[in-house]
Amino acid sequence: MRLHIVNPNTTASMTAKIAAAARAVALPDTVVDARQPEMGPVSIEGFYDEAFAVPGMLGCIRDADRDGADAHIIACFDDTGLDAARAVARAPVIGIGEAAFHMASLIAARFAVVTTLGVSIVPIEHNLQKYGLLARCARVRAAEVPVLALEERNADALAKISGEIAAAISDDRAEAIVLGCAGMADLAGELAARHGLPVVDGVAAAVTLAEGLVRLGLKTSRLGPYATPGAKAYSGLFSRFQP
Image (cartoon, rainbow, N blue to C red; front, side, top):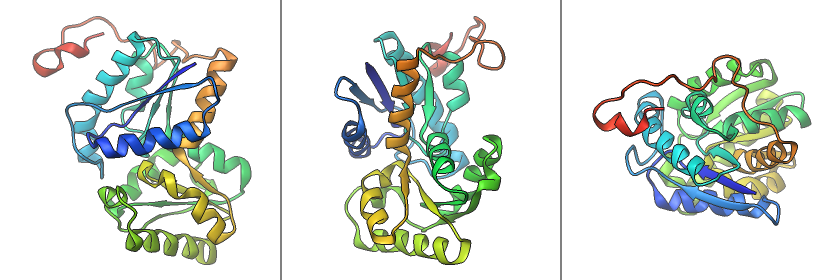
């Protein structure tokens, strides 16, 4: 199967890291096609960045759909533009945040999320409520590590993330940890071993779920808000995004 993973920001090194994490867990016959938009922010940290990331990300999904993708993964933990992508894509679309939350809920009664910056806490809490999993989340914690600081193995950043995990276990009674950034994908195994509990990486979770949807032949329902958008004109830079 052909699995398209889009990094909604424009940082190529992060796209490469996400692709490597995806290929490490994908089935042998899965082809991972990782892309990033040409327009948008270099990282997504909060509501403002998210708004500017959506158009370019949707363009990647439209292009990959036409190239025969069997499923799409949005590799931003805020699930940037997920609903819009589901409305426009032929193939099913999974966000790494939603995938990670559901995986954690299957292995723990209470999980905590450790994300990058405090500005991301409320968007993540909004998504947890939307997905019906807010009650299962003990707390959303921020390590106060900028997204781009995760591009290189940074001992200080790793120490801050590890410290928040330790606090989630002792103070929040978390039984599993969800890593709240695609840039943390390569840290899950090390942090799980260090703290002795399951640590869920959203990229790996989304790959596994996307492969399952494809194997089951399941696609997005068109009865409701994910109905194909009606034809209309889009002007200026957005003219290429018209349905």
